[in-house]
Image 1 (cartoon, one colour):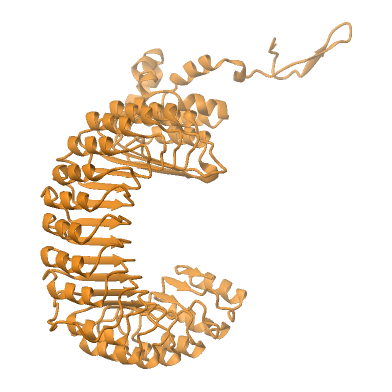
Image 2 (tube, rainbow, N blue to C red):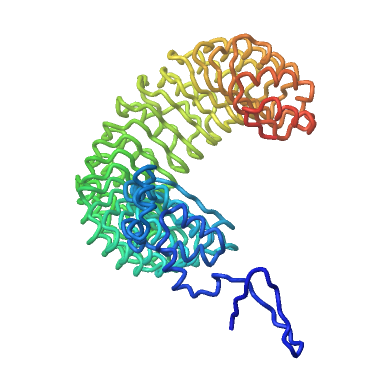
Length: 614
């Protein structure tokens, strides 16, 4: 038995000489039920927060007090009239009352890795309750630290009834019981993101559907035990879904996704389906029920054939679709692509990735019928050739502004087989990346087709030389604004100097990473480029002299500068870099081996407002 003695005494000895240890009074001997009842009578959130700091046990108890369980202030004031008078005269408002007023707060908290614990969630629940309540919560676990359990989510459920956004990533310790706690207490939840939560099943979604009818944004990724039953429940209880993303859930099939689409056909605007066991029948539902969908992404759907794309396009239900991504769908052919172009009459952005059966014929047919297209991006589409690219530009929408080709191995130089060329006046941005067959002759044709280009990215193209680049510079009538020539190893100072001379009044961003340039290019930039704010000369033959030229120029106002891997830039550039620091916001000195650590430390002190990488 615990025996209490006055604080001043430590022990006493009996007549027989037996010594009794005496304990100080402690509330820790009270059972949880008694402490819980005491905490309910605390006047405000500040007092409860103070109690929560005493111990982990008190923290968990305080965090489990629901808002409706807190004793009303009028009862406390009736027991203590002095406090009532103080409230009236001094204007002290209890934080419980204040909490009622600001219950729609949008405080955001994020826990990651080792910090993602039940104790951390309990502290958040207690700490934000007195300040309007928590609005957004992001929890990112890790394989070695999965310490968030039902206890933590119960604390959030009871202490944060105004929670609107919940994101759970990589939490194997979270299961149905924890999500059910959220559903029971957070009825205002509008956004739910579940990623890599293997213990979550359809039971969780059933609870969320019943407890959170206002849900409008749902993301489920790599949850192996979530299937059609949970999606059917959400379809019945959450008719206002606006955004749905389902990825890598093997139990999800046509029935579950179709139910969501049909129930939210007038509210759903964003749909992403990836790595699911859906079939052509599901695409028919998308075509008929996607009346409000503006953003659609379909990735890695092995059971969908060309028939599904053809039916979806000819259903004429995707009239409002503006952005469409098709990636790693081996069933897409030229016929399906043309049907998509006809059915999506308001399509503005189109991205194709790893569609191996597409050819020039399908691309040209699509370009003819896609009358509203503004951006076309092709990546890893190896059957697309130069003829398909140029003919698409000839037949494309008059609104096309952006075209991008990435790693398309079929794009090679052609000298015959091209029809008469007429310019595409609307195109403003051209990006050709890692297409080894694209060289000077291809660029010469491209500049004739696109005389109004302002943004040019020729990245990793070893076939581009100064001769081809000079033709581009002469043909761009609008003036180049952004130029990216990274890893064009056959471009030299001659092309860069010409660029700075012809486009001095418009050039704002220039990337020369890996090009064969020297200080001559930096001298020309310092002399001509008045508007240049972002410059990258990484892995070039630049020296201290080139950096000094930039620093002493009265014209240039560079904000972002990268000289990473420039082995000839040394400590001698320290005064120049300090001078550039008047405008610099970002400086990359990584792998500059000739710059000492002491020089970098000094720069960090002097350029305190600049973000320096070293």
